[in-house]
Image (cartoon, rainbow, N blue to C red; front, side, top):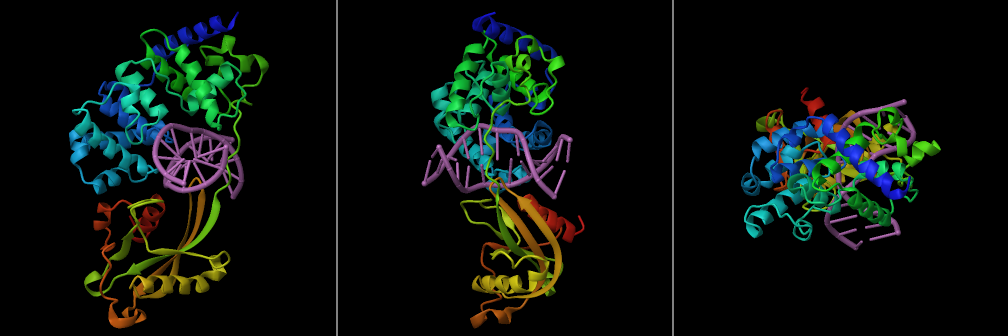
Length: 372
DNA sequence: AATCCGGGGCC
DNA sequence: GGCCCAGGATT
């Protein structure tokens, strides 16, 4: 059997398998390019089970591009809370506004145009074009690279930028006439359900007969993937600043800067401390770093007790955080300005905190504090 | 080409 | 508790 026959076998059997075994997912009930676009952005780096409830809430609140375009950014961020990679949400809203203004409210159906939109890279472009418009464009994600690397025994490192190009060329050749959407979804469905990273279910695979990796007994060794660098550790101390008087029952939170890590999300005031300050015995030393830093922002605090320890891993940073309760102490701040709250600070209680978008690590701390 | 961006599941 | 998964933007 030559290469072309293997390709044809693959395309035919995969397509038939998908049409029989496809999962009934919310976004597969829609032909709305906007809804399909939302699902593809949410599905970047995020598994199906996690995305489903977010997709329902998001499309219910923003059923049309007009609704999303006109919404305040904080509300979009709040609906994205917990999903991570928050620039996806900001880019999506920006791109939808662009579609409203530049494309008359219609998601573009050409590779050139759709690729100019914020947050729409080669994968998302191919996915939306093929699924929403049935255009014969490849949509190569991690699932697809795993499936193709195994079936065709491709041993290039999939973390390399050039490997994706090889995969896209191959994936495009495989698309059956008039069935781009189903075929691309089938490729991803196979990767998710059968051709899994570990312990692939080869015995139920529709293309096992001609899978090169399977023939060689190499299915577990593929795809080849260079290991990522471990995240660098950062030691931090965070303050649960408890209000008194009119602010009884409230905690002070602040909004992060416009750019960078967790941009514009809300958080507990906290500072990075040097290594060695933040372990259990080092808490007293790190507290003074916290007090001094907040004093510079005109927030005077008197540290209280350790409340909890929290860890959070990003792809490139690991936060190791001690959380302490504090009370306000205006006298810590020189020149008596301590009672004026900087505008990016805000008091919240267990009810009003619902209005602000927090990264998961702070959400956990606040929920425990308020016994939610 | 390398780094910056979250968060969750599996064993 | 350690390992794996991984698109897009930026530099």
